[in-house]
Image (cartoon, rainbow, N blue to C red; front, side):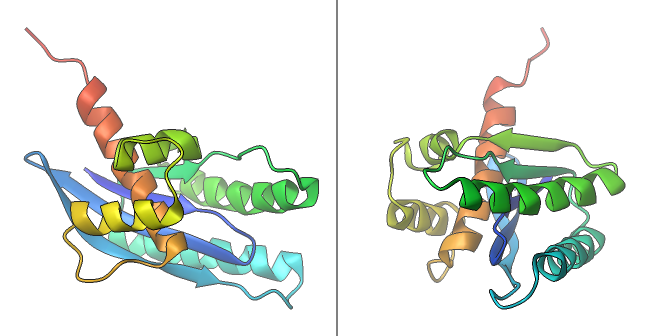
Length: 162
C-alpha cells in the first residue's frame, strides 16, 4: 500500500509518501510546498493544488491521509487551514483516491505512543521508523507521520478471515 500523507497549511504544506509491505515501512518521498506569505490566498491555494496534482501523478498513491483540523484559538488560522485542506481533498477526489483523516493526537499516538508528543519527538520517531539519514522538516515529518498512522491503523484493525 502506498500512502500520501498531507500536513496542510496555507503557507507551507508538507507531504510524505510511505509504502508498506511485509510488515515494514518504506520511505518513498517527502517535501514541502512553500507558497509564500506575500501571495494572495487564491494564488497560494492554486500552488498547493498544482503541486499535489503533480505528486499524485508521479507517485500514484493508493490512499491520501490529511490531518484533521484542530481547535485553534485563532479562528482565522483555522479558516486558512480549512482552505488548504479543501484543496488537498479536492485534488484527491479528482483522482478517485480515498481520503482518510486523523486527529493530530491520534497521529502522535500512532507514531510516538503518546498523544501529546512534541514536534521534535514526532520528527525523531519518523526518522527512526523510516530509517532516514536525517530528521525531516516539521511539515514533511507531520505528513509522513500521518501516512504511518494510516498504515498502522489499517494494518492493526484490518479484519482477518478464518
